Image 1 (cartoon, rainbow, N blue to C red):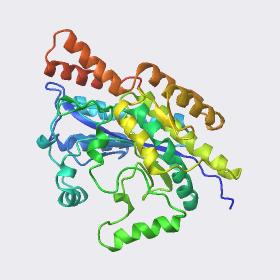
Image 2: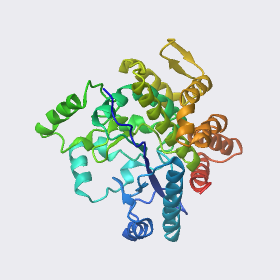
Image 3: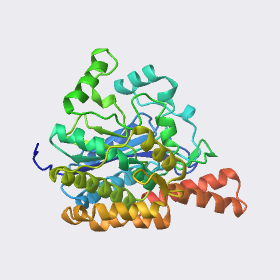
Length: 378
């Protein structure tokens, strides 16, 4: 059945952590004035998160990727300016290198208190931050159909975004430890497959009617139909420390969605693979980022990520041109060349240790880099 072409608008949400400029540790109880000042300067586009040491920004609905970059740059600048006035700085990272979750204080908000009461330690440990990308798809049926197909590409996006190699002062050996923490919650991980929006809605209503959910916003899959907006929301990604990396991934996200719509329009579709196979790639991305490749599920073999990325860029080249985001999409090659935030954090840590720094000093060096890199290119 033909459906109207989506608007393909884009919106980006990012969560930052607030660090003290003297200790480089998290500020577990920042003054309320920070949120008030950020709200005034941003047009109420900055909001608190579960932990008081966290802060979230969200762009307006943007018609182009270029507009989204301008929005995100403006919001990062607001948070940096306000935080600096109070002796703090935001870091765009999915886990602080050495802070402890037990030391954190929770934001006093009914939604968060209900979450913690229900989830207990699994919620109290959520000292993690993510990046979410919304793509405007107004037709509910199309949203579900594209979600089913898009799941294949989720590990690719994660591999390019990894920024959480450390947890409580330890090198975890993983590129994205954030998902280890987040996956302890229910209703996380890869999305389910549904034959229609009605089927999706019926399943959600089972949980709502059972008193387990208030609404679909408490379904935290890596990819979901947004409960608040007419969008498909990608949630698998770590926060990208560098602004241009975040924008590049948002552009790729948008173009994949557009490519899948084109296939549907031409009576084609991307093959839907079993979750057990996609989960293997999800794990590989969590563990290695892009260093050890991912499984090409059509070939049934592990392929170097560089090859997969070039194939993906070829698949979405028409969409990148049509949506005027070719430059942003192609910057993904820079991530591959330079390394993700996780790669660079580990490199700074190792260099500091090799030069005679203590473990604590090396971790502080990582935070210093995160502070600088979060402001890079604004």
